[in-house]
Image (cartoon, rainbow, N blue to C red):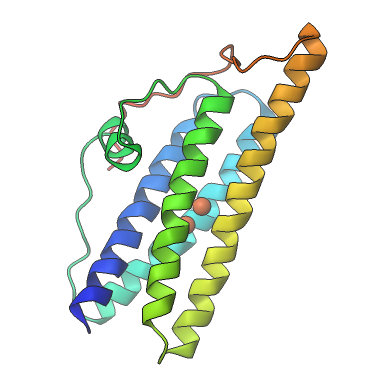
Length: 172
Ligand SMILES: [Fe+2]
Ligand SMILES: [Fe+2]
């Protein structure tokens, strides 16, 4: 397997593992049933993606990357800053950044696998799922803002009175 493709597979695998850890951290930090269900569904999908890439690497005898560190470290390496992830709106925004990073990784890999229609088709399916996540998260931020405007009768960006995720949890 081409070195470039191997690196892309490893990169996506790492992103998927991080997404799983990030979204799972939400499950334990909220009592909002709807929000919880949404993240549960997202985690389910990200796990399916991670398993696919782990199998793909294993099949080609490539060691599966060991992903370590904390959520905060990885989040910082992705969005390039230290994050204050308090509240559902900020968490969803971080989720959107992660999803966008994944979308780019999927596009790059799909571009390079022109000779493998079956794998491409599977990757497009995953790409669409990441797009659905992105759209849901973006829409949820809008809904939170609308609710806040209705509750307080004014526009505001600060929606801070929601569960705090434990960004320092180890994700492996
Ligand atoms: Fe994913
Ligand atoms: Fe996703």
